[in-house]
Structures are given as C-alpha cells and as structure tokens.
Length: 122
Image (cartoon, rainbow, N blue to C red; front, side):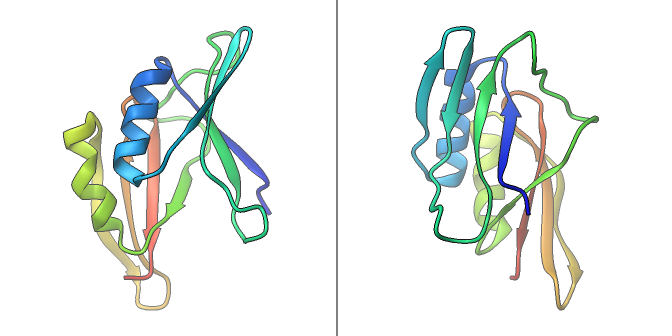
C-alpha cells in the first residue's frame, strides 16, 4: 500500500545517470527551489509505488544502514546486478533465492551510498 517513495541523493546528476543506466529508464528532473527531484517513470493504473530521487541537504541524507529498504521489482535481478558496479554502485548481496514461491533478491549500494534491494521471481 505504498503510494510514493523518495531516495536521498547528494549529487542529482550522478544519481540520475546511475539509475537510468542500471534500470534502463528515463528519469525526469524537476527543481523546486531548494529541492531537486528526479522522477522514475510510473504507470499509475498498475500496481506498485511511484517515486523519485530527491536532493535536499536539510531534509534527506543518503544511508547504507538506516531507514527503509526499498525493493525494485525485476524480471531477473541479475539483469540489474550486471550493471551496478560499472555504473558506480556496489553489490552488497548477490542474487539469493528466498524460496521457490517468493523468488530471488539482491542488495546493492547506489552511486550515493543508499542501500537498495531487488526482487524477481526468477
């Protein structure tokens, strides 16, 4: 029932480049004075939360150890894992089977040092 998420970034251009390369998406930028946002593409008619990268040093700080862990859905987490390190991220947990019914997961640090997870059925 999550409706929106925000991933803190220190450098919006670096983070935008990282996420576009890893997930093969286009992120649109908006500047609201002291807050910069990079919106992930979303289909509001389908299940799943929409969200953005967000840069505002007074409100947000990237973290690899505190806060909520966001899971991005994938057809196969290995697809994204193969693009993480070459784009400035670090794999923390490689593709791991949760169980046969739930599928697989992996965890990485993005270009900003945030801990982010992936999930797929295969």
